Amino acid sequence: MRKIQLIIITILGGLSIFFEFQKIKEQPISDLIQFVPLVLLCILIIVYLSKNINQYAEIKNAYVLTPSFLGMLFLILIFGHILIRSNLDKSPTLFVAATSDIGSDGGFTLDFKINNHLKGVKIDRFSTTSYWGTYTKLNDTIKIDIPTDFKLGKIALLQKDSFRFLNDTTHFLVYKP
Image 1 (cartoon, rainbow, N blue to C red):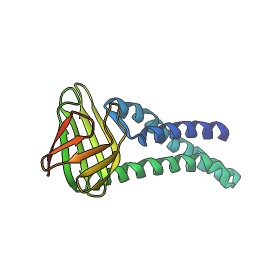
Image 2: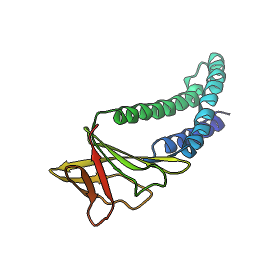
Image 3: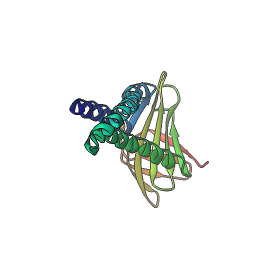
Image 4: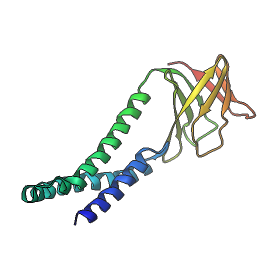
């Protein structure tokens, strides 16, 4: 019985971790997909914990608690990553670069944080896609490392109120919060 519990917890925990640690998330689609295995994981941890505690009371062997502890470890990793990403996203902004040439409704923005954290947001008709990455800045040259689902350069020039990638015609307006 514990083998089945371990397999189910591992599958649901692995799926939840896979969805949480992605660097590109499209809302509301990815939120819904991520929500199902995470909720099932939480429910099964509660069920297994109650069953495993009763088994432990009878057998007095700690290995019966393994499925519950494994599930809790998955939850700690997932919610820890959510907290870390949230703190990085809330850190102070150095500047924001925005363009309406990418994305169908609201355009695309790159939020450059002071701790070299980079968050991109593309707004389309029925969804919002978030991207996470990093950047390095040397004088007026910025090298970005952010995965996208569209073509975006890796090296850009920052001028007073504009931002453009080398060998690209898309211009971004720059503003400071």
